[in-house]
Length: 142
Image 1 (cartoon, rainbow, N blue to C red):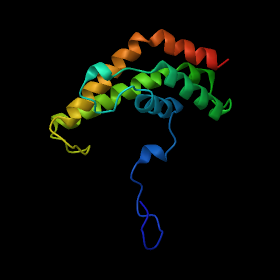
Image 2: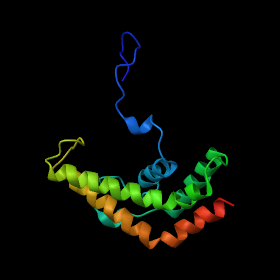
Image 3: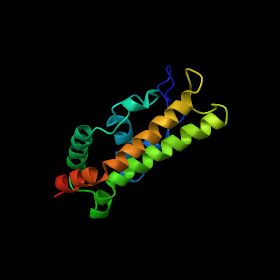
Image 4: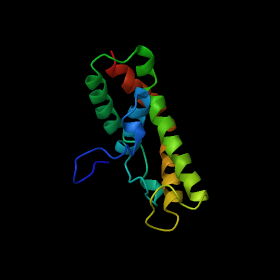
């Protein structure tokens, strides 16, 4: 956060965006949010799936942006990062729901439960499309 008057830094509000981390976490969270066919809190689970075209476009851009700086092991784990981060967020939404919605801001009754269900549905769809996801990563990393 930045002070409006002085322009000085007050505090860091989201450490995972400024600290060193694993590339698969950054990739995975982007896929979780950006390659889903539905909003994060969609109530109609029939609308939730992983868009393989969006997955492919993002993977291409991510790999090009990394400009060969990823190890072979990191590249091989990109799909796993998408599944892992989606599952983790689903668990975080569920935990917050069970604890009374104390962490994530909510706009309606069962909001975090809907978010949880959406993330778990997305994980299930990723698992159905796993071979295609892995094939995309392999074809773009050559």
